[in-house]
Amino acid sequence: MTQTSENVTWLTQAAYDQLKAELEHLSGPARAEIVAKIEEARQEGDLKENAGYHAAREDQGKLELRIRQLNQILESAKVGEAPADDGVVAPGMVVTIAFDGDPDDTMTFLLGSREGVAGDLDTYSPQSPLGRGVTGKKPGEDATYELPNGKSASVKVLDVKPYQG
Image (cartoon, rainbow, N blue to C red; front, side, top):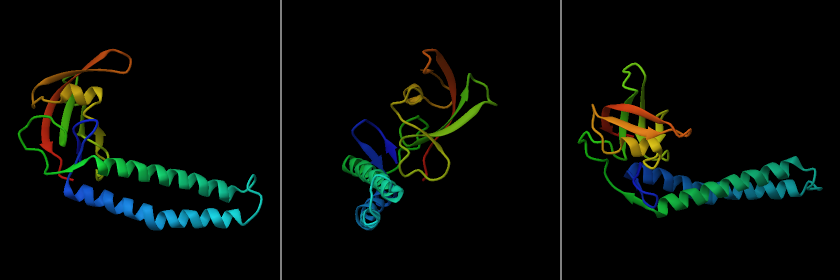
């Protein structure tokens, strides 16, 4: 899955199907299970000191938040193919960079969205400072981006390939 703008989330068909299935589960069986837990805890009496009730309500809040997130992602989703393997950094690409040009200080990450990403691959938004800095670059090119402390950092793009999630 890749994110190209604030308003559109590009998804592979597999990522879209996975998120849709998660939404259906959370909106149906998972929601019913939480409601049952809340009702069961409510039957135990005093709600002020009922830890089970408060835990179930907290779980309900988390569930409803995730449902809203999934709805937002799926409503703005465009299902399509992986980006072209043209060697240019763009959303949907796995990028390997070297910090300050040091080939021993490298990092590999997906430029896109965390949703639908398998494994431990780090993910950076195209709107992040690093994402904006490397977008459009090719292997061998340098990029500069602003750090949270206001200073600049430079990286060299070493490798770019489409995400195969």
